[in-house]
Length: 337
Length: 79
Picture (cartoon, rainbow over the protein chains, first blue to last red):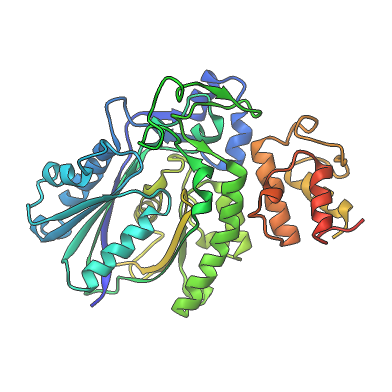
């Protein structure tokens, strides 16, 4: 039995921040130069009362509306976020009710960032092909904006909020989710982190103390911190190796691959990764311009937009690679249904 | 690779004219050496010299001279 991706829908919050908005607010930010490198001109930002699970709900509601499979045949709901509504309960349980899914549904959350979609696909594929479930609804959603300090250029210009819902189930057509290569290196845990707000370091007046660094970026321990050089170095070292390992495992040659859909970190990083692995420009999907880096939603959003643009078509072989916070990474090959 | 060639590769990614970087240069003396410029230099090490950049010393350097010394000690650069 083969498992395939049966459908993807996504949702971006209505509020948008353009580079022009950021420049008006921060006249010292060189937005043109940043745009040149990042390729990002706007990003969506969740409303004050809007959480990641709200975005995830909207994405999933759109997918259910398409009636790809009868809702009662969805047996599992898996929700990936790093911006949880609560410590408990799991947002997956809340989403089961909100989406009107049956109580026979198994539901749980997991916490991963930019590699999250790959891990979700791996879990879902295993569940479907082992006969444990018929269809899995995978929701990947994040609102890093809630953690980002308004004066931290290194992250505010890059990240955008968004959510994707992906349906994984038995494929009787050409579609299939193939092999996986995953990896973890916890030595990078402090390179991308929101230090406070959990139980290790509860939020307090001290954790809210703001510090401005050498690069004139301000943040507190309650905010997202990213060590750009460390993350960049990790990615450009690990991702080409991961691709190589996946191609070896699958026996595929790079000519067999129609599209490379990497985590949409930013244009500069994706172009560098393409050059490093000799991926032709016209096979590397780069779709960050209007969304920014949407964390675990970025790969499914990029796939769906490429499908809608007529690039990815039935029978095309995709290689997906996710990488980031943890450090955590994963890659897989997918034939599009 | 010769130090001069490497410096010119760095000039190129920082969008500067050739031969406009010296060993004394730091982010304070080179306008283009901002956080994105720093990543471009790391990318150049990766691409031009092919040595692993996932180490602290290849990520955190505060002057061109410091970086060149580290690369020389790895036999990645020669005078």
